[in-house]
Amino acid sequence: MLNTALSYIRNGYNVIPLRPNGKTPIISSWVEYQGIRVTEADVRKWWGRWPKANIAVITGAASGGLAVIDVDGDDNPWPQEPDQKYDLSKAAIVKTGGGGRHYWFRTTGALRNTAGKIANKVDFRGDGGYVVAPPSIHESGRPYQWVEGCELSDELAPLPEWVAGLLIAPESKEKTGEELIDMLDGVGEGQRNDTAARLAGRYLGLGMSGDEVTKLLIAWNQSNIPPMTADEISKTVVSIARRELLKHVEIPTGNLNDEQRWGALKKISEKFEIDLQDIVFVNGENPYYEFTIGDRKAKLPTGSLQYYHRWAAALESAKVLPRPLPKKESFYEWAQLMHRVMREVEIDADATIRGEIEDWIDAYFEAHPPVENGSLIVFNEPTIHDESTWFHKPSLERFIKMWFGTVTESKKLSQEFAKMGYTRKVVRQKLENNDTKNVKMYCSHNRCNRS
Image 1: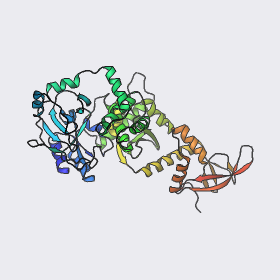
Image 2: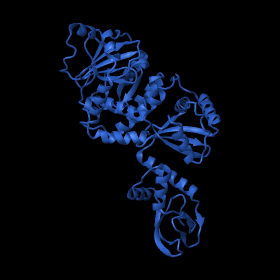
Image 3: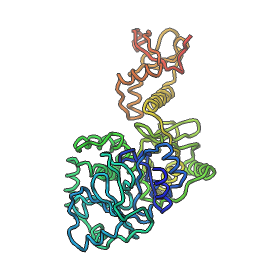
């Protein structure tokens, strides 16, 4: 796969890795590669890490105007007109592993993805899309392959004018509304990813956060046959959230070197009067953005970076107050710059949960500083007792809900405490009426005296 992926980029096509025998990107987000060139170093890194990964080619301007007509099913009679069949025969044609056909053309126009607009079970992939490319393997075990007489080349026939005309023809609002209702009832396997992306874009456009959209789509996904995985839904929302952000501004080309990255961080710091040290996209089961400001860290759900008030609220929860943005000034330019300087790290689900818990407890102790109280612990307050810092779990749960908007499962939180080596014991606690009672308290491993 590596050599073929290299051949694609040498012929001017931007490629990304997909899961082996699948259609879902392995990398956390591929949206930025609609605006910057994939390098040989990128390809060698990806396929060095995932040698059996399928290959996807990004369509549209990212690959020199690549336009692909996607015909689903080997029994699909489209097109029936002889002239249209002749026009399609000029394309570079791929037989898909699912039995359909991909017709590769070149276009100079800006044409976006559509589903079913050309004809029934006939989709189009342009700006904002990608196609699985030969010699990738379908989940059925069958390969994607060029039909006889076709091969990988940078020379493609122009997209037929009648196809472009169908793509740019306006749709009535009534039809669009009917289609939305149909989508909410669930779709089949060939339409799941495109429909999830359309719904995500619609919900994000209404101002919903990435977490909110993910929960809605996971519920909607249960009506699909078969359903997508939760991981596919999450990655789709992350990808569309970034696309929604970037489409408002011109996407810069090229990658930042270390000097440029530090310069950009300094520029953001000066603008918002903060000490921004780093921005990281943490790719795990529940991906999020992490901002390091001085010695503090702030977390922001994916899909929320395009909104200044949500970004500022995340920083404020970490006791950092950014300079307000003037009402008439757009935040999109700054959010785009933040994406440019963002590093990506991948951690497993357990590490993500452990990191969240530590952050919650740090914030809790900062809001409620532990106090020395001899042999008794003050009701519901973190207390230094026997040279260890102890806390009341229900109080922590209420704090997490109030400050982070997260409702924790008490049993699951206890299980995680046990995995992390937290100590639990029954201690005497002083109540507000000066009575006392025995209460279960926890001590985190880095604040507990083990002597």
